[in-house]
Structures are given as C-alpha cells and as structure tokens.
Amino acid sequence: MTRARWIGAAALSASIVLSALGQLGMKAGMQNLKLARASGEIAWSLASSPPLREALLFTAGGLVAYALSLLAWLAVLVRYRLSYAYPLLALSYVLVYAGATQWPELAEAATPQRTVGTLLILAGVGLASLAGGRGSK
Amino acid sequence: MSNLLLLLAVVLLSTSQVLQKVGAARRLAGKQKPSEWIAALFSPELLGAIACIVAGTALWLAVLYRMDVSRAFPFLSLTTVLVMAASRFLLREPVSWHRWAGVLLIAGGIALVAST
Image (cartoon, rainbow over all chains, first blue to last red; front, top):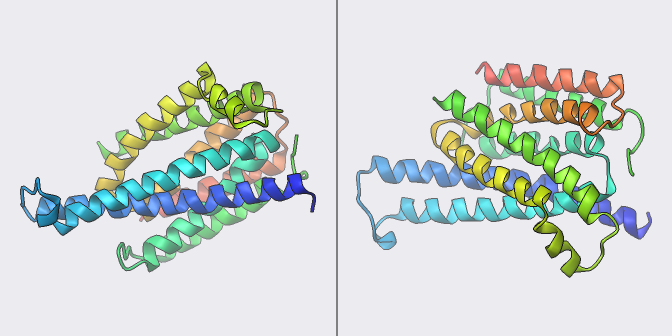
C-alpha cells in the first residue's frame, strides 16, 4: 500500500469510528440532560447534579468526536469521489446500533426489525461502495 | 414536532456534505501546508458547510433528546439518498445502477428500523 493510499484509508476509518462515537456521546449527553431535568433539581452548580455534569461531559465529548470526524472527512473528500466515500461512512450505522444497544449507559432495545434493518443498510452500503472500483480521483 | 426537526436536520446536513465536497475540490485539492488548509476553511463553500453543520447539529441534539439514537440515526441515511442525487445531478459525477440499488437497500433498511 502506498503512503497516499494508507493515509486515505486511515482518514476514512477515523471518519467512520469518530462519527459513531460522536453520535453515542451526544445521545448519552441528551439522556443525562433529560435525567437532570426529570429529577427537578435546579442545579446551577454542576457539583450538585451528577446527571447535569455527565450531560455536559458526554455532549462535549460527542461534539469533539463529531468535529474530528468532519476534519478526517475533508481529508477523505480530497482523495475519493463523494458517491464512493459517502456510502462507506454508513458503516457507522452498524457501530451506532451496536453501541446504543450494548453500552449500559444507553441500553436501547435491540429489536428484530432494527437488527434486520441495520443489516440491510450494510448490504446496501456494500453494493453502493464496492461496485465500479475505488472511485478515487 | 420531532419528525419536523429530524427532516430539517437531515436537509441541513445533506447540504453541508455537498458544500464540503465542492469546497474540498475547489479549495483543498493539491494543498499540503496547514496554513493553506486554514485559509481554505474561510472560503464561502466551507464556511457555508460549517454553518449548515452547526445548525444541523443543534437540531440533531434536540432530536436525540426526544428519541432513541438507534431509531433516529438511521434516518440520516436519507442524507445518503440526497447526497447521491446531488452527486449525480449537481456535481455531474457518474453514478452506476449498482449504487442506486445500494441506495434502495439502504432506504429499505431505514424504513424497517424506523417502523420500530
């Protein structure tokens, strides 16, 4: 693998993983914000409200991961056609689904429809991305 | 209300994708130095892309507040369909029937996930 191709592959992998981490972080943040509001505390002091503190931490972490994924994505766009690279980014659907259902912080329900639907997306991603070469430009 | 927010977020995030690609092609291609990249970030295309991302992300947080991420996130694949159409019709990239078939499968998967 040449250096340029290695960089392209690394940037693409980073975009996919970071965008999934960003989604999970933002969701965990919003979930904690909901908890903080439900608990009825008017917690202007972060120390007195663990959910509010976690809401801020997770949301900020999620946004940072998301921002980094966008930077990596720009490096991807220089090297690949959008119609090739973009469908590959959809691999993050599987990562988000796995994270949302397996990470105890979120513990969302895994249903047959969601599992089959996510696998359909993967198949679609494979078809859209692998047909017709690498699409580099 | 949640669905309206979701739709708006998807449109903004799709627009950002297209602006990013146009910006990357016009401003970033062939640039190596970090200073050149930073200058490119302030081009109209990439500033517009950033504005769409910021607004889309704010709406997205409001969506996540109301919905499971395992249900909301697949809706973003609508972006795939919009971006594929924009790749073909605005950017004039060749898009083979395989890719369209893939997009259809993705959309089917989304519909299934969304039904839960």
